[in-house]
Image (cartoon, rainbow, N blue to C red; front, side):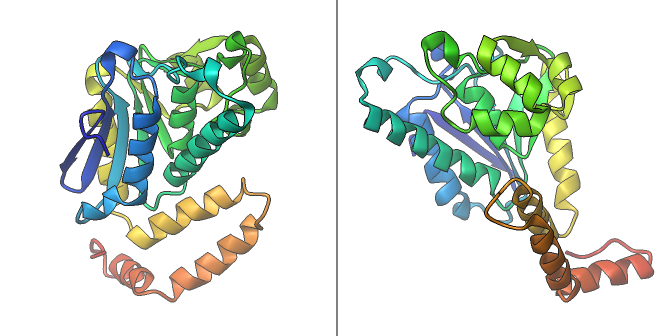
Length: 257
């Protein structure tokens, strides 16, 4: 992974991944996508006691303003499909990651950037955040999961409108639609994300991981989400983590997870 393109900072088990292409408004190119794929496949294993991940963009203008489209016009249909598939596979790794991943949206989150934010488990937006899927302006459609995740998050009708018109929405409307979890001033963005991750890090780590899996299962047509839930519930009930949590509750103390 090119650590000049994606900056990695870690403190107390919380990792901040900053996409560092400010002159290009942090647009996703092959190096960025490969870097994200590498980190969520292998890079995270070097972090001891990983509690959570924050993804953000460099500067104050953009989270990720889209994909770097300069080379799009030379791609064949097969190459375009491969590009889209690799992006989807990368974002699946983020969506299914075993600890919480929060998008700290510090400005433009358009196209592939909006899709990246939606692949994260939670989204915290600065007041200047702007979301949209403007691919139809280029004669394209979203290719990194946007046609699937956007309706899941905000409903089919509004997702259809935003995708077909290419319109953008601000942080307030995004919050009203359920696209983001919180809006904060830009200067408080990372602080809010860290506070959420510190809260989740005090919970049972296995139950956190299993909860992510169970919720994601509700959107996977190949599995029965309810079956995942009851089986996981039983597995956890018979775990040392649950026994410690129940004992701590009865004894009125903090659990030692």
